[in-house]
Image (tube, rainbow over all chains, first blue to last red; front, side):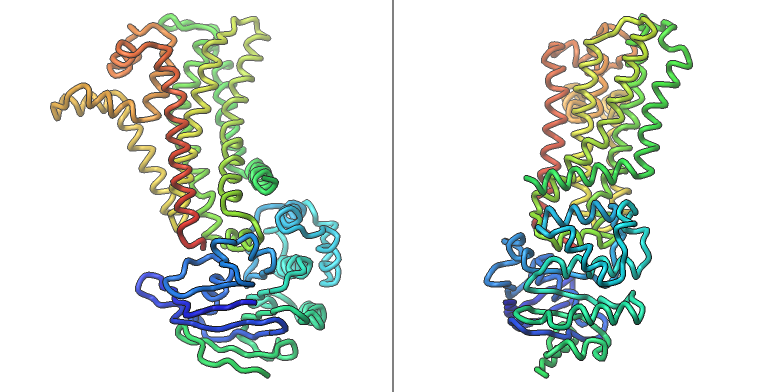
Length: 212
Length: 275
């Protein structure tokens, strides 16, 4: 599904990704780990087509995420580490996702309920005015409602309380089939029950890649 | 196309709720109200009276404040979203960069143009209600000129927003451009010509490149070209080019400038790293 070949990305004189080659295939559920600055976020952003590589290539289902971003992103859901301060109301944000990603509003509401988030009463509230946990729950609900083949979670539980974390893991159980789940995390124990592959990065390189 | 409409619509809604939009609308609406309260329409200065005088005063102030308002509110449109990671999330959905960028441009254009034109329409309605003669020629000319000036500065703002990484730098560049263009209006140009012994064609050429100067000259082009308030460059231009030709130029040229800068901004937006 995702094929990364000799990918190099530099920011000025800093090498963020150094000749990285790795593949993520169907039914892979990966914990992507490494210290700060190891290149995890750069790798994710390259998969999402945000960065123009200095060398090498990224392909998702055989497509280039920069040149064919719409077709690539139809199959990807993304949950960022920190919810951004989006000024749209929840209703408007859902409208944006409904139209751009062809996701049903009811499906988002359903997943939000599963995450114990009542969005129906908050529809006209600005997204950025919600609490950190509520924002993160909504982003997770949106990602799951997209029914994508590839789901990327960048520290998805950072803002969640223990109960909400349990809800999140419960929702993900059994969702690995025919998908690629990519968790960027510093705490392996949190996703241990969900992953079947551990990838460690350091200094822009993949230093370990193990199936479990 | 549906995504383009969606982005424009959501940007418009988001902007209308913002505090800057409230201040922006109050400034232009307040100006008109202030002119009426001050009795501008009842007085006569240098041959100008009634609504003509009010609209002329409105447009003279607009020359100064509209560009900076557009620049500072728009220049953070993309760079601000990039700064706050909003862009990273919003672009993780299957939306093309073309639809995202041009949707933002359209939404923001409506936001900045609407209060300026609505303030003028309110002036016309209130003036008519008070029994004043409506200067339709001036009204339509100013509608076109404001459209053109808004286009020019919106395009420039999106151009800056597309390549600047932080919104603070974007604001700094916006201020510099505004001061630079303001300084090259008429009097500063003549001083330069006299000091540096530049020939008049060069000075007129430079002034014609400045959308603010074109706007200023066109705004007074319907009046007597002998008027001293026009300034030497305006007098020279209106003495050399026919009025109709100049009015057309003053509307088409800023629109072209705006489109050119907006297009350059789009090219940079698509060819650079997005976050």
